[in-house]
Image (tube, rainbow, N blue to C red; front, side, top):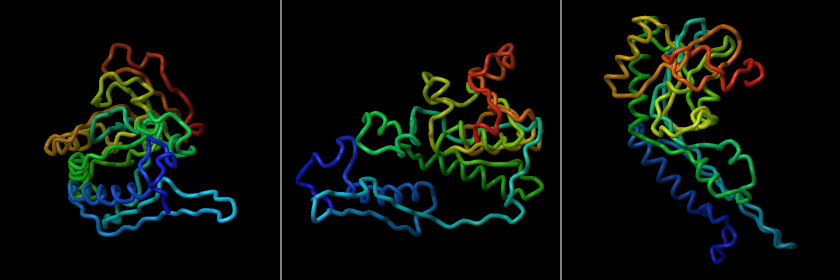
Length: 267
């Protein structure tokens, strides 16, 4: 379906659909092997058509690839606990970088009609080793059983980064978040970048502020050498308040927030 003789058919910032399909398949298999969960099923979809009367071409220049593995879960852990005042908001996984910025905006606009830097920044990068560490931490907690599992609620970080998963994990109760408690891989990141970057291999969880809560979870993370940080707590006021400081800073709770809205307006 591709006309490869002309380089002008595709934006300079994008690979051709055929190349995307080849590299995506190879990349998914490679990532799965590094992660420790080999790819076992998948398929691709693409489409191209030329109008025989007008010569107009229509196609997906970003073809779709689906892949998957198999998993299981204890029936007693199917539902998350409801957030309660005082619970800690904890990030698990790799440090924050300036990747995945504008991912939602980039994937929702017509490709090729924007700056190439936006395309590049919107791409999420995978780290199979970090994903395996995160997986081992979560699995260890699950294998403690329903009564001893320190993780009370969990949300995977994806599109939207912290500004998506953190808000949802404290729903509907609300919470206060200290952005500078997030582990950074790039110290130059602004508050907006820390809040919105879609860096991967990251989960946000709720745990109790106790020896059998954050105490147990921190020991498991240290054993698996997985970065983690307490970035806030559940407040119960129905709002998400985000400040550009550390919780240990003097007058941290008196700092002007960079984000303060009712949950019902941002979910």
